[in-house]
Each structure stands twice: as C-alpha cells, then as structure tokens.
Image (cartoon, rainbow, N blue to C red; front, side, top):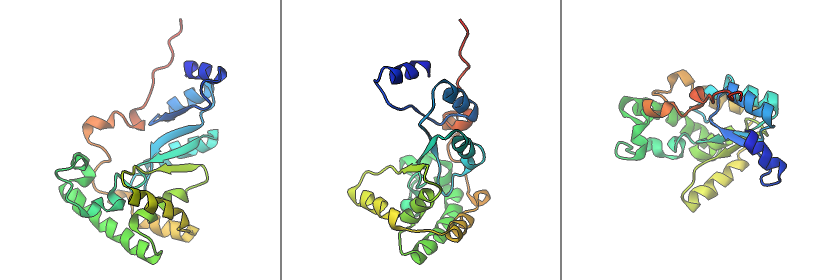
Length: 200
C-alpha cells in the first residue's frame, strides 16, 4: 500500500482499489491511503458481504464494485443450461442436486421479472444497482446483445417493497451449494488477510 501511495503522490495513478480483502486488510490499507473502491462478489444469491464488508465500506466512505452480479451467469440464463461440461461445472451451485434446487429459486426470479416487464438478468442486475449509489456492478459480458440487455437494467425501477420481495424470493439459506469449490475459497475475502508490515 505504501508503494501505491507513492504512485498517487507522484501523479502516476489517481486512485487505489483492492479486491476480495478481509475487513482487517481493508482497514489497514485504508489507514495508509484512502481506498476508492473495494471489489467483492455481490448478487441475489451471494450476500454474505452484507454482514461485514458492505457496512465497513460505507463507514469508511469506500465505493463498492460488485462483481458477478448475475451469479456467474445463473440469473442470465445459465440456470436453464447443462453446465456439467462447462467451466461453471466446477462451482458447487451449478452441480447436480444443488443446481436443481437453485433452479426453483430461479423460477421465482423469472416470475418477478415478468411482473416488472424485464428479463431475470435485468431484474438481478437492477437489484444490485438499487443497493445504493455507492455500488457499481460489473457483469462479465462477452456478447453485444447481453451488454445492451444489461444497460436496459437501469430502466428497471424498484421500490423498497419491490427490493424486499425480490430479496425474500431468494432466501440465502435455501441457496444450495457453496459459492466456490474448496480449491478457490482461499482467494475469497474471508481468507483475504495480508500480513502486517514487518518492522525494519
């Protein structure tokens, strides 16, 4: 962080952001130089960040960059596809009985999307957008048609009641399977502790 701070002071970079960091790491980094943004996974079916990370970022005035706001494509239609032979097949939520259980949740989002006159992907993205002005979702997009669809999500207006209804449709305790396989969990914020700086 101190090297990044020097780059800001030298005018070589303007802002500093970090990704998948633990609360302790965020506090220590922010104490060296104010962070502009923290990148973390946040979507309808990944909300563990709401307990500690989101309140911490807001306490410190740090912007939130939400990646995978469509749940690794789940809410963009991957819920209906056979993912066993794709890269998504490594994620527990896209495997076997977990996927079947999660498809039930997806069907609820489909019905709510129909009610709001949009696609499930647009509704899921709008839900993230409505979490606050300090939240910037970054859906991974490889097709122009999906980019256009994502842009349309800003037109989906949700009231507090709508947000509650959508949130309640995907109870976290009913989401089947972990977010990541065992081998990748070490790269998530819960394990994202950097060691304290050694005194010289």
